[in-house]
Length: 319
Image 1 (cartoon, one colour):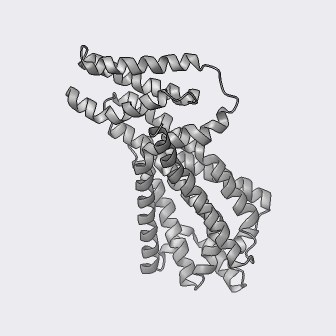
Image 2: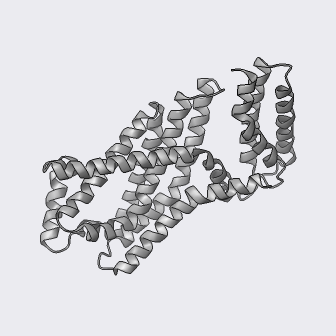
């Protein structure tokens, strides 16, 4: 790669890092990540442009980052909190494109699932299984279509659903090692299931009844599966498009970045599990309350994964 192209590709990132290094409130994790990233760029520059101004410039800001690490070596007692409130959201800003792609993949296959259910009478049973469909039809006949959410005890359902959702999240991340194809496949499976599931209730004349109940927990649950899909796509991108790094180095960084995204989803899956175990079963709640819970859930997801990363990034750029 020519030096001009290397500088053009990374200039905005370096300027951003320079501003961040001047911030006295940077967390140890963030300054460490900046130092590692700058060190990789400096190593590349020294290899291909050893006597250039680019190498001198990178050496200067890398040294500043190195000094910052040892000046502020004292570990914060609130590192766990700072990860969720500062470090992760600031880093997640870089993955908005992968998040949008994960959402579009999920939305597309949801529509395909609904369309398939509408055009093939056997499709819903092939996806959801005869046992589930028969049980639901029986519940509908008994005038309690959402009775499935009342079968298990609150605690058992909460624990079972939460553990299963975290498992799905980890799978979406791990399948990213298949160049992202495995992640897309898992998103497709869940999306087709959701689309056919909702069409099944539409066909029974119960779309609103099902939506107001299911999306009480599903708003966070489905959103976070999409976010876990984003983690897998980050890993896939690191394999397919290593940029200025070696493919192994890029993959290692992708795994680390993707894992942080997955870790960020755990509290949200716990919230979704709690809602499904303890709240969704209250199928007789008034519509306004169900809509309020769904709206707050959606606002929480959009705030944390879309607005807040943009806000923190703009704030850091403006000093």
